[in-house]
Length: 194
Image (cartoon, rainbow, N blue to C red; front, side, top):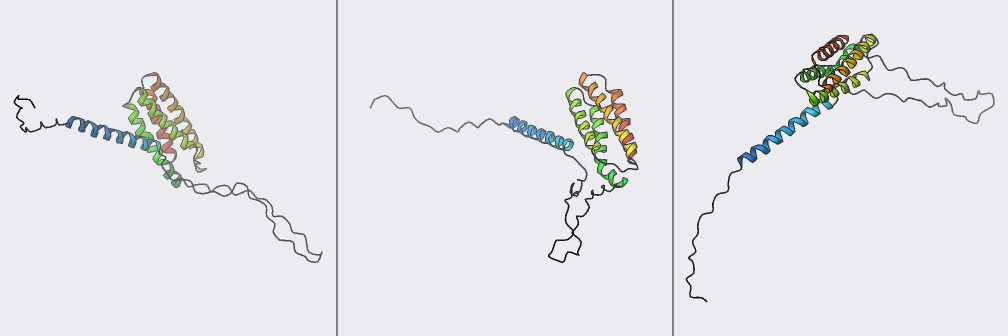
């Protein structure tokens, strides 16, 4: 061993770790923002309304009305039942149809309000969602009593959405296309009595 004096060991308190409150709040804020984005996407992308009920088979198969049995030849031969087409689906009532489409039409008004406060790709994305909803609406069978008014108003609305998307995509002023789309939505709403 050496004759040099050894340093004296003393215990000192450990310095406290720096507080990371800023990072914690940043993580919490980003998590909340992600949840809001997911909720908004679900709101606009999930279909609303009642699902159509089950329908009958599209092509019924012919069946024999009687089975042949060993019997005297005086009995008539078994005959095939006539092939019939399934009856046309029942014409929905205006009230039932209104219940199916009201969610989409309410969302259309809300979506147009949001588009009016948006610009650029945000507006284009929202108009794309509105066009998808309009496509879903066109796939629904309206009652025959309002079919002509419904189809005409929905076609005008779809055309106005195309104009609105074009204006949003090119960065043009959205005032006139938005006004036209709102008027078209109101015409569609009036067609079903909303």
